[in-house]
Amino acid sequence: MAGGTISFGLVNIPVKVYSANESGNRISFNQLHAEKKTRLKQQMYDPATGEIVPKDQIIKGYEYAKDQYVIVDEEELEKLELATSRSMDITEFVPLETVDPLYFESGYYIGPDKGADRAFKLLVQALTDMKHAAVARYVTRGRQNLVLFRPLNHGLVMQQLRYSDEVRGQGEIPIPDAQITEAELGLARQFIQQLSQPKFDATKYRDEYREKLKALLDAKVNGQTINLTPQPEPVAKVVDLMEALKASLAGKASAPPPAAAATAAPAPELASEERKGPKRAARGEEPAKKKKSARG
Image (cartoon, rainbow, N blue to C red; front, side, top):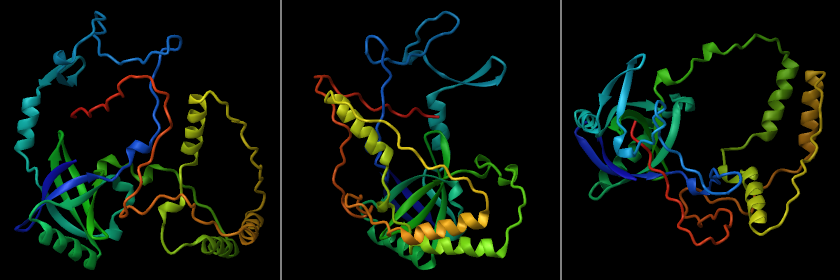
């Protein structure tokens, strides 16, 4: 996706950034005209005149008062980025367990660029041994990003973080006090123990809704119908907390242990086969291009 330099002390490590997301597996829809079934396009227009405004006539403006704007052009934004360090400067090292996942946004894989193998491995091994992560900042696309570098296997993951003012304080959420008994707590612990696993394994889970949606789309493409009648869900009325916990334990004890699906996706470090979306009827038209993300 991009390149950069991780800097700590006097050590500079040229790296490459790779996407960690399989966005191609998502099923997306286009907006169509209800009668003509033609694809619709969004356009910018002047609300005062109704005139369609072409892209080359669109500029950026910051509203500092009602209907009052200051204009900022792309060249100024580019110079502002150049005036700030674009290197990924590590500011501190922290124990990984102290970083709340609430601050996590998107994640990226980091690999060494040419000539940086030894320095890259040194940083990965040191972070692994110390069970620490590195906090860094860098500027790109009109934003100073706060990121966390954490070791994964023999590489690094760059986890983009939210700033503290972008995370709502938990104190704003009403959490009333409630009284529980030691017996209730003991049953709850037993239930957790029965479902406890040594570690989280994402390959045991799959998006069942997406699979059903893909089957529906494939059926529609082939002119078939599919039964969409929802299965009735049992309605349980919790009258007594203790009785509900006991019933949960009894039900779990009698159920067979869940097995990982045979078609589960491989672990991230292994090569995976290309996953295909729903089949589409041939229309002889060029596939739609992905939209480029606009700066700021």
